[in-house]
Image (cartoon, rainbow over all chains, first blue to last red; front, side, top):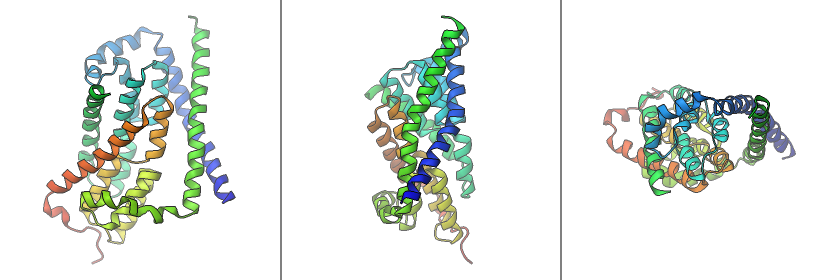
Length: 137
Length: 155
């Protein structure tokens, strides 16, 4: 049992280190972006789409990072954006339904199934639930 | 605000986030190792029974679904591959388990991470579970019959 706890602790430290390598750079980049006009530009460009799910345009950054990289990259990008509880809950729902798409789709493919419908379902559901949460929360 | 101010903000903010994540990830990994040590997974696969029944899967699907829900999609995927090699799951079942797990997996880790940054944990947990069951149930109902064919069966 002691061995199991030790193993878990070591795994935890190792995982935290791996995450830190993603979260810290993303956090830095997004923090700097929030002080440039580039983020404003991206925000304005994305806001018509993001408005459908009740999120500000700038939230497109963590969504894209979450879809293509992973949840940790998305979290690194959400934190500097100063979003409300409701917005964080909406973006959490979107990201939990669709994240790490390249990696997780590869895992599904390894089990021998066709994956195009799986990915499509995840992305479509993510946005439907985002819009749903925007109304009910 | 000067460049140095922003740098300081980013440094403190990012380290705090990593600390927050560590507070979740480390206890979680310890919990998972204890869970494996006590071989609890085999004992609680029965909890997946209602889920597999609604979707219309055999009992064989309980283990990969439970493993994926707790340990994540790669662990669940590994168990699917094992069962498939031994011919215990049809292509149809493998597909439906995958559909379930891509929608809902690693429920402890994922939910805690977002709860830690301020999301309401109950809605984001429930919506995944409920959607996974509903979508799989519908997919099972409308899936063409030929995908019942067993692949990888011992011939």
